[in-house]
Image 1 (cartoon, each protein chain N blue to C red):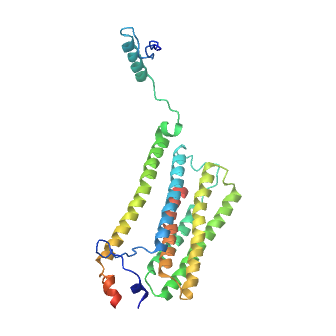
Image 2 (image 1 turned 180 degrees about the horizontal axis):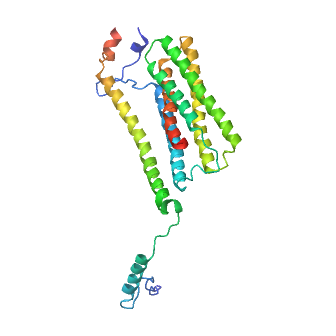
Image 3 (image 1 turned 90 degrees about the horizontal axis):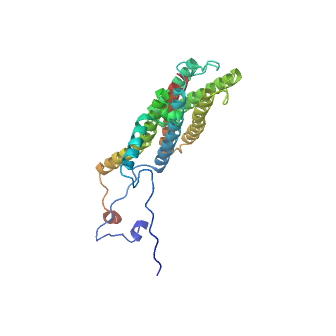
Length: 198
Length: 99
């Protein structure tokens, strides 16, 4: 006798209860809720930045006495980040070997993005653009820093997934959830780049 | 038994026992409201120009954005539920127990 057969069957008004099924795995639902919350965080940043920027006279943002942001170098790193997202997207339903190569590529490109951004930050700090030097500097470091604070844990998740994949123990739901979070990190960056850098 | 003192008529700017006074005072209030300009207590929302427009735009954005996220959630779950319902049904539990 199976364990299910030992349990009394619940009957409501003489009928079987409706079949219950899960349409969304827990890991995916949890990650989707987290992403929604993070989207609201960035929406708040974008809103505050837009209002403050609109208060400046035309041509006064960024302030003339503040260092210029590295628009071209960041455009290249933006392309790297987009490429890492595309790599993961293409390997979603591929063989584990292809998934492994895609994960390695995405981690490499994502790490390069974070590393180059870090180098640019150090250069800007040395040139005098700080969190307190102007509202421009404050918004730059808060918004770009918030994105980096998402990109770095997301890279750690990708690394965790790669390790699990190499051991053959990667849960497909965890793989989907991890990819979703990386897509969020990739998708929000061009919006921030357009707002803050351009 | 105590007799209550007669209550005094309610006094306010627009209430008067003198005929025509209330109408004149009301006219004064209306005239003053037409002459006075808006009190711009907040330079962000009442200042006009690009800053005011940005404030209004971002208010609309922040109001609609969470609703669109919730709507997207509901849409995805409804779609997945529809897909699951269209998939081949499993036999009822009573039939599965015998298997």
